[in-house]
Image 1 (tube, rainbow over the protein chains, first blue to last red):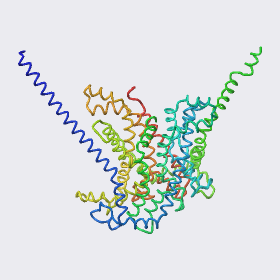
Image 2 (tube, one colour):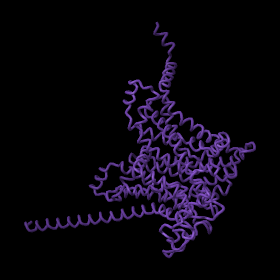
Image 3 (cartoon, chains in turn purple, orange):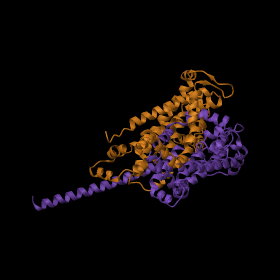
Length: 302
Length: 314
């Protein structure tokens, strides 16, 4: 091989490598465009119905039925609001949802953190067996006992049209206890409890004095999940709340759709829906990171 | 001698019993702490489920005395055309909706997790918006989108030169697609977030090694990502089964309690609600609840046996 041949070979090799690199860069750019295009389209489809909800809430029936549809806000917000209030006591329903949501969440956080802490920190006889039982209850679909559940609530406890029916039954969820157990196991060292015992803290109060303050991030994450679930619940309140003034928001909205006195008024309906949805959207957007972290902690260890 | 008498008193069995008792007393705090769950589950979970079983052999309207009818409710159930229709509707909606939900969620999670995408946080939030919205609100929003004469979807179709869709009329053939589209929209994001969390738990070195070995994107996805995500896929499958088999809110709000034209949107949970709470056929509804629950548990066990096997070990 002569030296000139060698330089030629080296040069072609260089050129090929360059071409390959350029092709690779173009390939990566194309992939980036395709990927982001798909994601943007999906994000648009996810978010657009919410925009549409807010737009329709401001339009009257004429505007809604106009062709082509109007994509900008109308002027009927106030009229829609007044019509809505003539059909359902919206703010009363709102207050019901808020009260039930807050009390239920507070109670659930107490029970779930106590249970999760006990399963994580104590080695007591029957623990593993009881924990397996708790996990097994998660597999049972709610539909299995729904009929006697209603008999129990309505006949024996006399909880029809009472807040207790929506606050108490689900207050100690298996999922919540499981979730809290994961959290406590990962974040609370058992030396901390020993130190508290040596300092003379009564066993029963260790949780409340020492552990609970350390669980604040967990309370926030699990609390958001529980609250949103409670706020969105439909079948339970539909069965239990039979008086308009006791309806929670989802049940009131369903009534707004089925109101027999009027036709289907999408503007009024969307205004109610928007006002019921907005608080949850705000809560979620303000605490997305917390919420996601909480959700995935439960899923990944599951 | 004293030692002998001591062992007589504390025979191994009684010794075990006393230490067990001592252990229980020493840990009384733990039992108190876990008691709320077991008390509440006993009252509002276990008791209704057991009582439902008894009720399924009775005929009762909630007022007059209950009558013992044996397996009558079950025999009638299996001859009930609406029951089979509702079962078919539910399974059809569940299966058809979950193919794009789980498949799409996996693909989207893979895409978001890839290095080529920025603003990951934005996308996660956007895709999760439908999940935090109540099923009632979602159904109402979609009922306006589906509007036959004013709905945005029909407007889009007509603008593109296609015929508009009569969502609720005809033979009811568009009712199930309407429910399925809504279901996909609502649940894709949730599954995507779960898969994404699983993907982020995969050691990135594995991808690097695969890339050095010359594996392409498709090979990486099928030979590294999917097998490692198997437990998480199982988790979403089990939850999806329960969710799909008990779907109630969305069809109830879209097409009403009877499921619309030809009962095309009647799901099993709606039919149970209809028999149990509108017509107070409490025994009949209980029998239905037991059959549905048996199906759910059966499918979940199938899922676990089929997908729970670790392929990496085999």
